[in-house]
Length: 216
Image 1 (cartoon, rainbow, N blue to C red):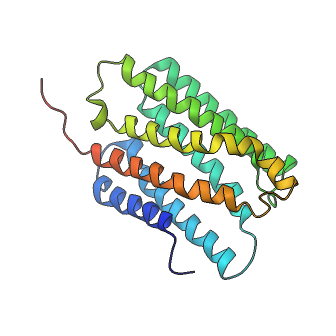
Image 2: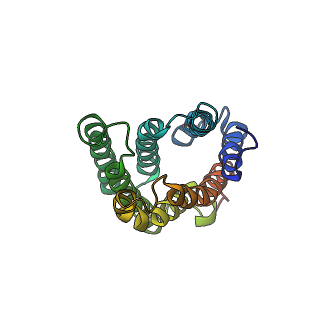
């Protein structure tokens, strides 16, 4: 179980930052990072315990929590966007993604095997949503400086994370079927390294939420 891999500390660090910065903070969308990051830390540690200590498969756990991640990021990006049409596209797209994830785990790929179809759909949606969020930043003068804007860092982290997985995911089923990555070690390695980028960006976004805007 211990010592933990480096990526676990990035997740734990982001959670600690969220508690310190967002506790008693009235920014409702970002406030949800506290329970979300707690869920991510709990999932990582539980998954590690199931695999390393109990020596059981933990795929079922991630088949549940990964769609939750997609839904959360869709909700956050949509909530922070100012363009009404973007909000609608993101919220409706997030809803459809959630419905697809439930259908896939219930009737198609099941809970035992990694839900690669959900990963593909989710990764594609996250790239699209984060791009919409970045376009929204440039279209609206109401936003403050980009580098001090939480939406910029959230979209950047989500975009890099999912773009990094995108190419591999579309060949993932072939790799598994041909035993080229039977235990998904390559996928896990890519995912773990991308976590460094994602949670660093999230941590910066949370810290930025406390930076007061300059009066003009």
